[in-house]
Image 1 (cartoon, rainbow, N blue to C red):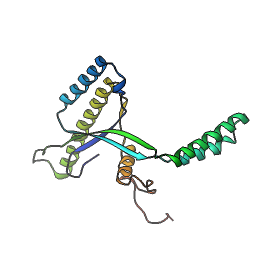
Image 2 (image 1 turned 120 degrees about the vertical axis):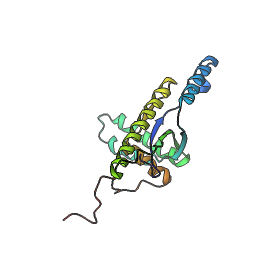
Image 3 (image 1 turned 60 degrees about the vertical axis):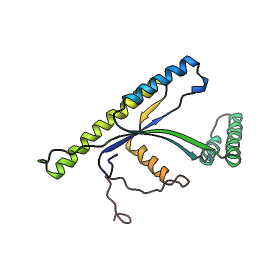
Image 4 (image 1 turned 90 degrees about the vertical axis):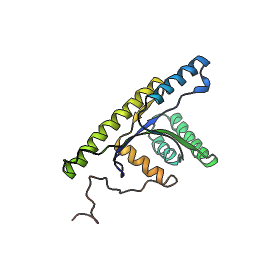
Length: 189
């Protein structure tokens, strides 16, 4: 992502590790690897834990819709029972999904003054993007060393994450144009 105040950022989606289920030696090793990653950082990072409500009704509806097409009547009955279970679970519990996100940044420095404005901005953005991508990939490697599944989020996933973060209890608005798409009013004739 290009940031308004200059520089770029990338988001790494990470899993978790069952720290409490590890032996004392394993815990010490995990802390050592994590401390090594923190000590290797040459720029600030932000670690976010995000919890959002989950609605299982769409999943239950899909299971119900596809149950009729199952070959075995026993499978159809099991599918309907599972859909009923999901519907009841969603109605009786506050279900949450959690994300662990690591945001890495690069704040670019001013380029030489002899550059033209457009060229300078594009070069600074591209240089910053390369640096932040490298930092994000290093973060993924460090988290993998901890036994944590992690991946750098792509542009579409990051956009969806930002939309959900800004309106966590509402469904994502439809019909939003991407930055490279032209915006028109009404249908094309």
